[in-house]
Image 1 (cartoon, one colour):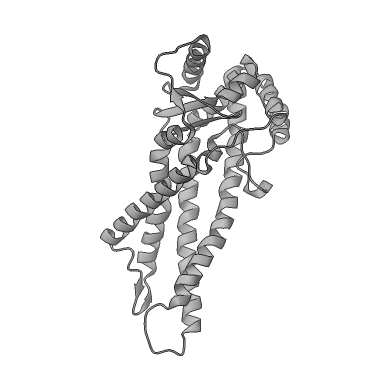
Image 2: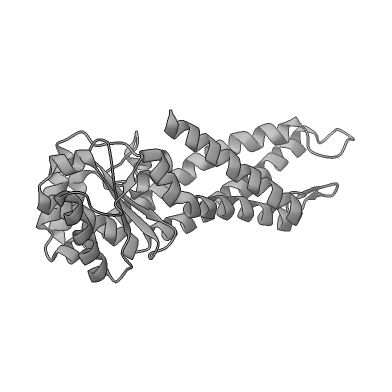
Length: 289
């Protein structure tokens, strides 16, 4: 329930901020008496597409902590926490990034990395993962998350999301205007009718579905790359292969929707919508490397 509330509240806040920004910039006035102002529409689409994506990126670390209940390790209180801090510190140094915050949260086996920049990031692991894996396997998972940070995957996926969101908003309104104009071609009144708004919503949903397939494909490629990054940091792919085999044989923990692509494990109802390749595909890719 907490995750649902945070997801809805965050998205409502983002839409409010973007709506006010669009009004102040004047890009929301793309419908004119002479038709669509494509320049203003493109500005509106880019603001909505990139604005929402980058606000989400900027808020990603605090939202991750709130939604999972992750506790950042400030002063290690036991041997496991000391080991986690030392391991991530050594891996970050090898990867050439600043030391991320390290956190632990209660939940089924999973881990994730997030943060707006390489040098202001967070690596978190679940208690379920710590309890179900060997130390070497956990180390490989941590290296996978550090590789995500070093590769700049959070920013890369944000840029991709911004591009596809812009196209979704732009094309949806172009199609909606065409449909509305066709329906109202014999009417004297100017301005959009109800068909414009209904078609916009329908096209936003349909094009958004197609866009999610594109983003998911890119996310899966970043997972393969982070697996290879783990192998490079560890000096061998064997620990990551062992960790993936372990993950494939246990029930993995779900992450909030906005963080799914950042986890060690994840997926979707269909492979096209999955943010992660299957463990079998990832193992095969590591064995080929």
